[in-house]
Length: 298
Length: 298
Image (cartoon, rainbow over all chains, first blue to last red; front, side):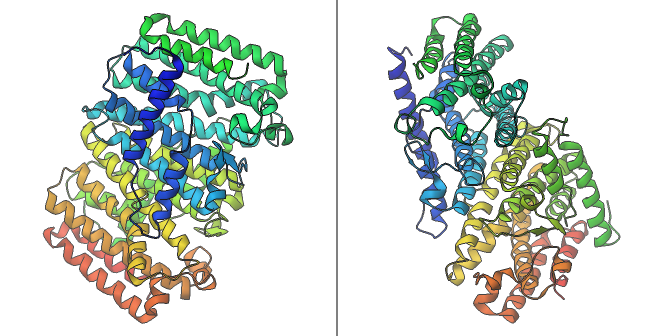
C-alpha cells in the first residue's frame, strides 16, 4: 500500500482504527452498569491523533501483515493509551477537565466511573490481544501480550506516570527527566512499532531499528507536547495548557529552557529517521511522521 | 497431595503463593519511582486469605498440574484481586482507610500512588500469565489470558464494581443485586477454578462443574462478607464495618433481611458441593472450603 501524503495516511488509519475500536467495544444493553460501557466508548471514540495505531499499522505493513490483524492490535494499544489519559486526568493525578476537546471522563461522569472506565479499558486491551483474530499463532499473541504488558506497566508507562507525579513536588535530575520521558511516552511508542515487527515475525535487526526509531520520536513528541503546554493554546491542543508551569512541574523545558529542548527534539527526529535506514521506501510514512511531529510546534 | 485439614491446606497454599508473588514482583532499585514498586509490594504481601489462589491451585491439583505453573497463575489472579481492592478503597469509590488490618494504599501513600499501584498490578498480572513458566503451551496461556480478562473486565469484576457504586445511591432490584454479586465476586472466583481446569486441559464437563462450584461459593462468600459488615467487628474483618448500612448501600441483606440472606448463602454452599459430584475425594479440600465459607459467619 502506498500513501500519497502523510495526512491522508494518518486520516485513513485513524478512521480504520476508530471503526475497529467501535466494533470491538461492547454495547450497553440498557443495564445500570451499562454506564461503564458508555464511558468506555465516550473516552475511546473521541477525536484523537491515533499516532500509536499509525505506528503499529505502518510497521506491520513493512512485513506484509494483514490489516485485520494490525488494526486489532492497534486498537488494543489505543485502549491502553486512552485508559492512561483517563486516569491521568483524575483530580488526584493531573486534574485536567478537558481532553481531546471534550470534558474529561470524571467531569462527564464522575470519579468512580472514570477509575473503573480506565480499569475496564486496560483489561479489555488484553482480551483483544489474546483473541486469535490478532494472529493465528498463539505464540505470537503471547509474545505480543508480554511485550505490551512490560511497556505499559511499572517498568514502563505507569512507572513514568509515577515519576511525572513526583515531578510536581520535586526537582528532578536531568537523567530522571530523560527516564520519565522514556517510560511515560517512549515505551508505548516503542511497543507500537515493535508490535508490527512481532506480528510480522521480523528479523531482530529490523525489530530493534523500529524500537529505536519509536523511542526517539516518542521522546521528541513528549518534548513538543511540553512546549505546546508552555506556549500553545487550549483550542489547538484540545486540553488545558500552562498547567506544568503553574504546578512547577519538572520537565525538560524547566531544566534546560525552550531553545535547548526544541533543539533536542529536532536532533531526536533526525536520529529516528536514521534508524530507519535498514528499510526501503516502504518506511517513508514513518519517516514523514517523524518530521510531522516536529512541525506540530512550528 | 493430600491435606490433613483445610486450615493447614489454606496456610500452605497461602505461604507458597506469598513466596511466588514476592519472587515475581520487581524490587525497587532506589529510583524515585521505586515508590510504585514498594506500594505494589505493600498491598500484595499484606496478610490476606488467598482464597482465589487456593481455588486455583486446588482445582489444578485435580488434573495433576505442576505447582510452579498453578502458583504463578494464582499469583496473577491475586494481583488482580488486590488491584481491585486498592482502587475500591479510594475516596472516590468506597473510601475505606483500613484493609487487611493495615492502612489502605492511598492512606499509607497517597491517592495518585494508589491509582497507579492498581494499574501496575493489573498490567503485571497479564505479564505474568504470558510467561512460559505458567504453561509451556502458548495456546493454553492465551486461553487463560482471554478468560481472565473477561472475568476481570467490564462484563465481570469491574462491571460489578460499577453496579456496586451505583447501589450506593439507588435502590437495586433483587435481580440486579444478584447480578452485582455474580459480577463483582463470582466471576473472579469462577475463573480461579476454571484456570486450574484450563492449565490441566480438563474435559468440558469438569471445567463447567468447577465454574458452577466457584460461582456458588463466590456469591455465598459475598453474602457472608455483607453479613459481617452488618454484624462483625473491625478487628475480625480487618477492615471498616457497618459502612454499607451507613451509606444506605443496596445489598442482598437490605433487600431480603439477615435471615433470608444467610439461608440463601447456606443453600448456595450445598449447591456448590453438589457441583463437585463429578470429582472423587481429591476434591475434598474444595468441599471443605465451601463449608468453611459459611462458618466464617457462625
